[in-house]
Amino acid sequence: DAGKGSYDHYMLKEIHNQPTSLANTVEGRIEDDGVSLTELDTFDGVTDVQFVACGTSYHAALYGARLLNAAGVRARAFRASEYGTADPITDETLVVAVTQSGETADTLGALERAEAEGARTVAVTNVQGSTVSREADETLLVRAGPEIGVAATKTFSSQVAALCLLGHRIGEDVTGDLPWDDPTTFFESLRSLPENVREVLDGDRAHELADRYLGSEAFFFIGRGLGYSVAVEGALKFKEITYEHAEGFASGELKHGPLALVTPQTPVFAVFTGTDDQKTLTNAKEAQTRGAPIVAVAPEGHPAVDAADAHLPIPDTDPALAGLLANVQLQLVSYHTANLLGRSIDKPRNLAKSVTVE
Ligand code: G6P
Image (cartoon, rainbow, N blue to C red; front, side, top):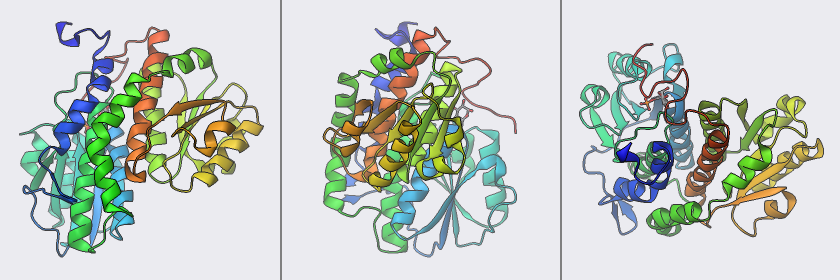
């Protein structure tokens, strides 16, 4: 317990460690407005990228694939356990295994298939010397530091930051395009990331919302594009540690089915990342019309703030990083809700930090 310092749980300590862990992830890897990843060969000649991962790492992989798409690179994220019969692989395919522990059996199985079929492989992991880093051709360490809480927090944000760096390099090498509209703004935002995360943590008012919505029937999370990865990650975190029913949806899909679940007893957390926000706001309002309280996760002054019933603020930043900040707010909502419910936050029932069976 001494390791928790003044925090009640490792998870809360790890949430609060993010300014430091994110600084470590990018340290020495940004040069002017460019990226230096000397541990990785050129990606020249790569035609497509397949991410394989599980759980929270899969949500980081979804984020990474979207970034590559924005740079004009063909990329998709696969759940490692579903990868066996997925898209064909050629020797120009790059397979990126994203795994915090580096020991997840499903992810190692997917990597094995990729290697057997001749793909080049890169591991993105938090653990140096882990099985994945020994098996893959190359390794990009996320450098978040050890994570004790079963629910991944700081390793997710560091995976996202590492995948931003990787996305920049792959874009440069493969298409010559970058995932960012304005690289200068992106790099400024990347440098400000630790301070922006600190701002979210210092202004923590998620406990008020946790209290207000305690006892709800279900908790929904919606987002679009990068915001979709954050919505599904927000819902996963919520179910893992609160044991309450939570689901993440692509905001545009709400009207194609999930809206039938929406009632005044189902708060909807809407993630706004600066891309197609007007559409997400329209989708959030469709839920609000059915009586659901809407929580906007968005910068101050955003049009969603006035329309919503509650607001979790994030600092202004590049659209590529807004989702990472929104995710910190959602981590806090999950944590405070689980705490009010007296859950076993660091060791949720039935879950393990690392799953070594398929
Ligand atoms: C377990 C953990 C999750 C984690 C997943 C993948 O299910 O409980 O928190 O996201 O494994 O773990 P990995 O180490 O591969 O990122």
